[in-house]
Image (cartoon, rainbow, N blue to C red; front, side):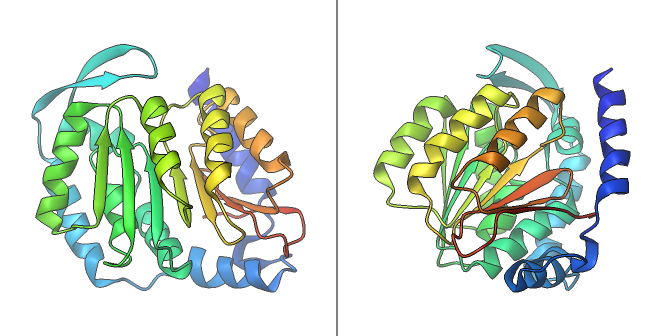
Length: 259
C-alpha cells in the first residue's frame, strides 16, 4: 500500500507542478534559483570522481550489518543494496552540489551520512566550507570515511552514533549553518524535531533540504508542518526533496517543480 501511495503522489505531483522552468514564479530570486540552480545541467570536475566511486560501490556485494537507532534494530544488507536504496541519485547529488555552490555555504550540516556519496557532493562545492555529517550506524560511518579518503575530501567531520544526542551537541557548539540537509529518521516526529532544533542555528540566507518528503503519509505530514511554520518564507517541492528558505524578504509562497 505504501508503494502504491507513493506512485499516486508522484503522478499527482507531476500533474500539479506548475512552476517548472520558473513558470508562475514572481520572485526574481526564486525564478533565478529554479532556472540556474535547479535546472542547471553543466558538469563540474568533481562529478566524475564521485560517480566513479558510486559505480565501484554498486558492484560491491560485501555483506554488512547496519544499526538503526530510529527503529532500535539492525539489518543485514550489501553495500550495493545500500547504494541502490538509500543513497541519493546522481541527479539529486549534483543538485545539492549546485545549491551549496550557489549559496556560498561555509557551514554545512547533514543528518544521515549513509555511505557518504551525498556528503561528498555537499563538501566538494568548496574546500573552504566545513561539512558536519551525522550517521547513526558505525558500519556505514566507517565505510563513508574510507570513501572520503578516496575522494581526498578533508573538510568533512563525520560524527557517528545516536543522531538525536549528537545533534544537540553539534548545535550547541556551532554558531549557525548556511545549509542543512535532513535525511535521517523517516518519521514525522523525528523530522519535525530535527527541523525545530535546527531553526535555532539558521539565518535569513540559510537553506534547508528535507529529503523523502513523500516517503509516506507520515513524512508528508512533516513537510506540511515545515511549510506552514512562520519562519519559513518559501519552499520548492521537487517531490523527492523539499527546499526551504527563510529570507524574510521573500513572500510566503510554495512552489512545485517537475525535476
